[in-house]
Length: 327
Image (tube, rainbow, N blue to C red):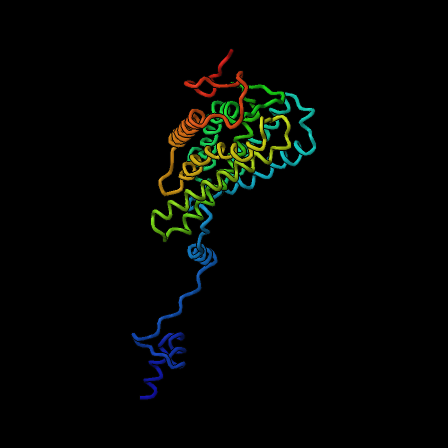
């Protein structure tokens, strides 16, 4: 009998014999084998899924990359304009050409660099679907209207004037169109990330409180940025004001009306699952520009200039700011 049992045991596969000798059952109740550890790629994927995204960052990868790019690009043109040209008074030797070149060098890389430095999320997206393209289009439309039309409110309400040599369109220097584009990209990226963080922080509050906090933040940020820009260019003598002190306080509030409209409108681009088309982006920017125009003109008509404006630069009461009275 023992020999029969030994013969049967010899016919059992060696792995099962080893398990039996270790005290494990060979029957159907055998313990499940321990699964092999996942490979490195699977571990990275699992870790990525478990990682919590910062409340400052956009959910969409293309928007996240675009915002980071524009923010990181900002020190380049800021250093050029406010770190070199203004403090070293290089502008004293500038002609129309040099002013135009400064504007081009500041604005054009915002269009060119992302063509070659492609973000990971944009690899499989067509050009028109990339956030940096949409952001550039929105800011380009809004800042163009702001310069071509709304700059004249600075002339007729705030008493501002450009006195540096420049090629102009509708009496506005070409270089300001370009520099405004670079500035507005930075302002609106800063607005995007702070608004996103604020909305995340107030998500558990009532809708009325959320709205109140958001309006208060937009007002504060808009005024801060308008004031900061006015202060930053105070050392440039060829952007003149009749009364610079009033321009810092009241004039900054007037300028902040741009951002009171544009910050919340711009932040909506690709913020949720629905992706915007370029046509929608352009139409939205035109709508924002029209709303700002209405607000500024209401100020001009009902509140009037913040300083005495020479008669030759005044605007006809029933007209618009770029329709001046000529006597």
